[in-house]
Length: 248
Image (cartoon, rainbow, N blue to C red; front, side, top):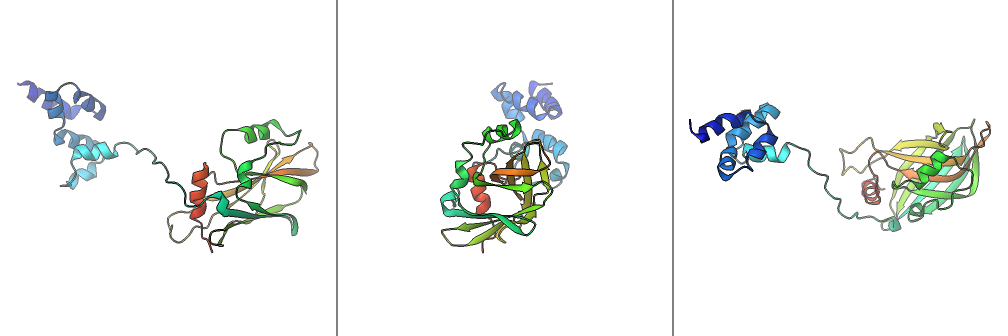
């Protein structure tokens, strides 16, 4: 039996890594290992049904090369929207009483809370000082919410370039209060443009940062955070997400 015949008998038994290494040994091994029959054997193990319908325009070698592992995430193109083009309308109620109402320019959310008040808990300080992308707003003057009272939030966004408005939060309650990290959280599902019918179940979150003296009294709120961490964790991702909203 010739060496070529031995290789042709062994190569169909190899996995993809070993067959790829064989292609690096020498020209003879590479030429034999590129035979599409061997790659059809590998495809048959991974996607048996595709071997039932041969594709005349795509070799099994190319098919396996292309799809055997997840493609690297492509870098986003520059967003068409900027925070300079945006302003946010944030309103917070306790029951039916309005306790906070501000028009917030987009860039203000990028400034962050540079001087947290003294006395904030360690977990909240770590959150604010962490490396992750944040959209936060210091509250001056601060306001208070009794722990026993329900609160809700509304957030609208406006594009200055077109004067169109989109709803980000439609009065969901702050129904999760974590006193260990001094945060109260509310979320709502985003409404996307009909141009993007397959995007759904993406949430916007608003967090209230507060001081807690350990009593059963009130949350002393000093900051607000807006995020879309289900789907967007960078400035560019957030802008692309906002651009896809159902602007009216």
